Image 1 (cartoon, helix red, strand yellow):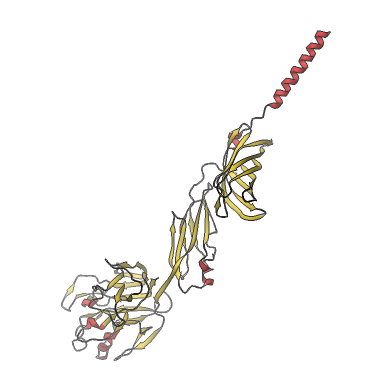
Image 2 (tube, helix red, strand yellow):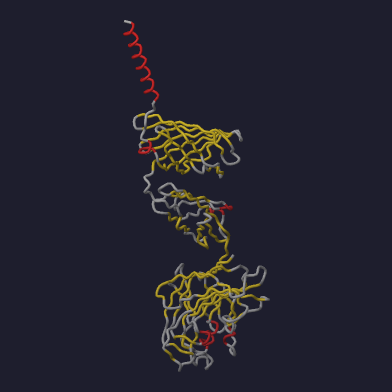
Length: 491
């Protein structure tokens, strides 16, 4: 009887011990198969009950810490322009609820200054490809608390990784220099007309092109406020959660010297003709041709008003005329149509001296741009009526900055292309036929050994001609150049 009782006691104790050991064993969860990975999401951040960030894009890495534990890592935790380092909880205990797991964990971390050492607590749920969690950071050094509410989805690993703005443009006439993207510095800068008002700068709506399958905030085409030196931060998030920020801003104001040729007035000493305004700035070869017309020349004027304009109602048409022997033998074989900034003052004894190029200009020129179309004539006269050669005429469009010592000093047809006083030039390289309006946008090139000097006196000569070699009386009869919307951009 006693042996039976002892045997029963041992059996009961053994069963109790076995049951106790089984209860101490922890369940093994499919951490690697279901939970481990990178999660792409966004977080809301509250500092001492004050919201300071909403839907801030961020990736979180989840790795295995044990059979029923995970490690949570949030790298480069940045808010309010401050990077406090990486939030890592090495061990978060999992509790299963169906196919979703809740987890909690805490750890004392040493973060970047001025945060220092502080306790961090995390709790949330993970499973079925989703991660939601709350992170509490007790910043004892600053007597503040940071609370993070995060939600993300698990990435497959095949997502696109590039987060870039590949193009950034602003379709606005006040933007004189389109935005330049500096990928390394993460900046986008552009320049505007100095006449732009604060209201104008509040209505700039950039158009963006970004990496495939990426998203950007603010969105493309949405007006932004660039007034009073404000900067706009564009955040690009790749499909895999990679984040790249660009800061867009105005780099400076530019000045525009522009001629649209919409207003015309009557001028002429011997024969009246129409000329684009302002007459004090714009001149043409009509100043010489008017004397030929007065003497009976029937070919008309080499500079005309053109009604088929690129913008507005009018443009300028320049035509190379056959003028050999006209004006009682004074005229050359051809008279090229020309338009220029400056003054035409007829010098019968020295026709090239009649063109006095340039008007006062106190900016540093950056670009010369406009629109033109051109039709070369025939035949090509190589300086005289008997010198007809097989050559196709070309037009000439140029802007020339030159330095002067006084307001009276000018360059003429003799030296506008050769003078040592020239500092910078913007010359159209393609003077061949163009049936339709063609845009040109030419940067100013500073000549060897020359630089812009603040405070020095300069003049700007814009010169357009229907025959490139018209100053040497070479060109094709009937060559026609139309120009519109000429402008020099300076700073």
